[in-house]
Length: 346
Image 1: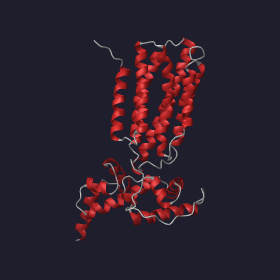
Image 2: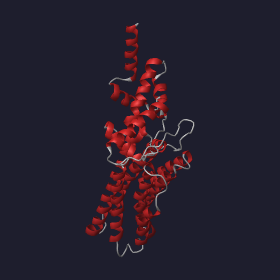
Image 3: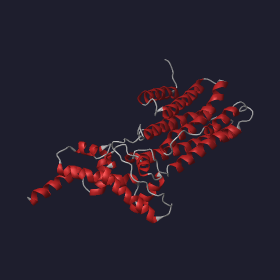
Image 4: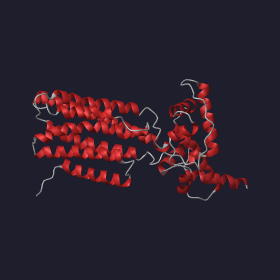
């Protein structure tokens, strides 16, 4: 019977996933596709080292592992800032690759570098999750932040694993290395891939506004960071524009789209809404969507599915949750109550 190590099986599955991502999203999916492929290669190297002890594998494995936290960062960063990620982020993996030449005689620099890369990018990704994700659909912002923090946690877990490997080399001469690496990779890499893929699906493929649906408002003066009057002015203008242009009906609405149309930095809009209403921008927009849905429930015979889609929601679960949060009842119950009230008036 042919024996195939489990890491090799998972690696083949990840390569298949990467191919599907590229076929479905040839342009926007490139960062995620690259990340998944690197994770697949890393698992392949682990699987090969289960059965083969080749110097080339020992040389390549730390260099490939060093790419994982950097590429994870590259997958999440576009949700917050426009433009490409600076190439200096790859200086760490390049240093690890160079250090692989001296690893047999002087291993601790690579051990420190691997722990440091995972630790630094894990902390950086967690801090990034506290900032508004301007290029994520507002409806999905809550889930994006959750995935971002799960990704940060997995990178910190990776730092812990790398530290355990260094300790094992120092104390036990690497006796448990293969067991630690294999177990950690089998848990961490598939989970990290899932988190990155789920997060990437919350970003619209196009971020360009349609001129047919939006009209540029008059620009507001830039608000001071702690100016309460300016924040109230931003929210008041946002209220007016929401009512006038019905931007909330756009299922792909993002903070970046609102910022460009209002000509105000995205961070100021997010902070203004949070300061005035005590809630995030996603919930603020969902209030308009729910009000629109309430009107349709009472005045039309459309199905609940048709209504939540026309109101700007993408999923029925999110619509039901937000509707219950704001009204205390389900959409169907609200429709029955509304029609019963109309009947009693007649």
